[in-house]
Image (cartoon, rainbow, N blue to C red):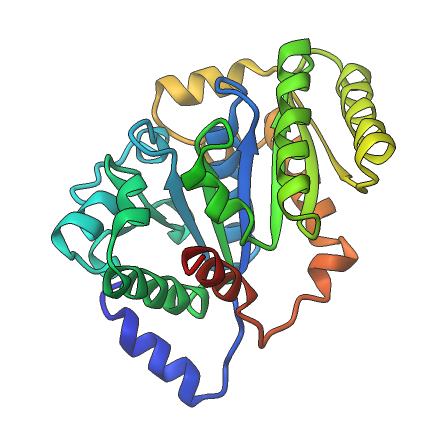
Length: 286
């Protein structure tokens, strides 16, 4: 990813105005496996021929680079504080996925002057034309910084576990999002489930609650099992998708990704839209 601007100019000159699908991966609390889900989903998409960028937005506690066993000299903080361009903070991981590491200070973006904010929006808009999917690994909870991204993306993946506190927090997160902006497409995933039926029951309860109390349709994507291969992969600082391709967790993740890609909303994505940037710009200009 050396000459980002040149690649963009070439695509634009060829009339290739395809805009990336933007996805925010969120949870109501930490420790549910959100980052693991994000990086391995990105790898699944990349293996299917998609060009993918993972943007670690868990400010100050990001771990995407750790999960793939890579070092990141520059982070999003350097972009903000030292004017380092995006093409110098984007790194390449397995299956040629790209990623941006989180760093301290990104919350300061709301305090920047108009010129600095415009620079950020221009860089993000360029990225939209260079990738098929951009996955934002969000910090746990509904902070102001997270909300800007969550309300702007096309789709939101909500990760929960069967634990009651995780379910409650996931519902609170979705309620908060819906009350702010009801047009987001919400998808549910239950992680670390001991039994498939337990996971499905968890997701169905959340789905019913969203429809009953908020009149919001939420789609179930699937259940990921509690699997010792995940812990082994984390210890080895390598994604389970690449390290254990035949494991149950990898098989289930593949099913979830296929379900998402088969969704009618995803398949009819416009190739000429940059609604993510328009929405994000409008939030910054408030």
